[in-house]
Amino acid sequence: MAHEHLDDVKAYLLDLQERLCEGLAAADGRAAFKEDSWQREEGGGGRSRVMESGAIFEKGGVNFSH
Image (tube, rainbow, N blue to C red; front, side):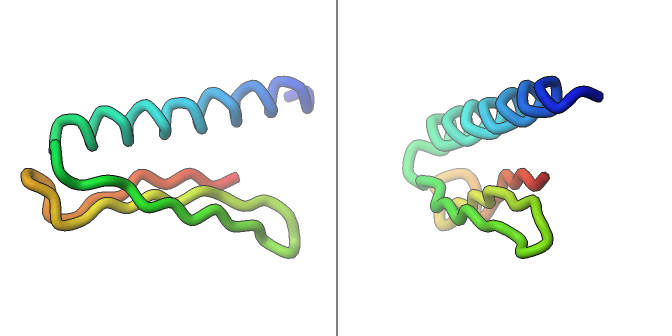
């Protein structure tokens, strides 16, 4: 797969993560996601998002790594 296609897929998946978090936070009404972005020394990285102590969800996460 060409590098530009990988960038497109990464952008799509990060946007999907954003939309999932927004939808879950809106459905819960009380909890908000906390974000941790990270990089690996050997390349790649990711973005972890966790919510807890919500009105509906006790704890949940939506994570992305590449």
